[in-house]
Length: 107
View 1 (tube, helix red, strand yellow):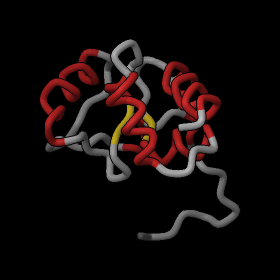
View 2 (cartoon, one colour; view 1 turned 30 degrees about the vertical axis):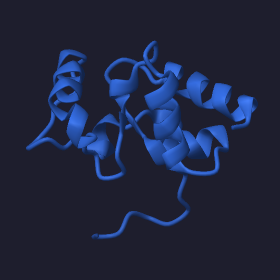
View 3 (spheres, rainbow, N blue to C red; view 1 turned 180 degrees about the horizontal axis):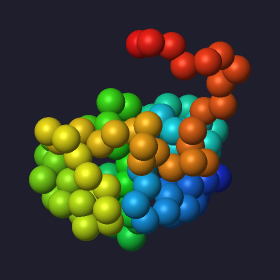
View 4 (cartoon, rainbow, N blue to C red; view 1 turned 90 degrees about the horizontal axis):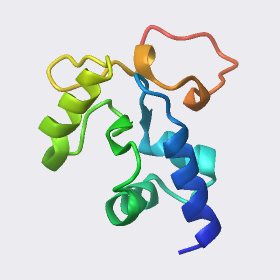
């Protein structure tokens, strides 16, 4: 694995503010990593000192094996969930929001 990408991923995860979340894909895009799976791998192997609970799947849910712990940690930071899902429109980290040129559609 490229050490530079590894450190960029770690730096972006560290930068997610308390009370905000990002997706694995958001972090991959910001860090210019080849895939969201690489972000998950870095968190799994070298994320013990990072705010890992702030990184979610693209649909706003947690990894199943971390779900209860992750949701509790996010709740303590002021990030609520509805049936195990975080509202990304409301709680997504501003730096991770993709700029769009089109207005939001109905779906």
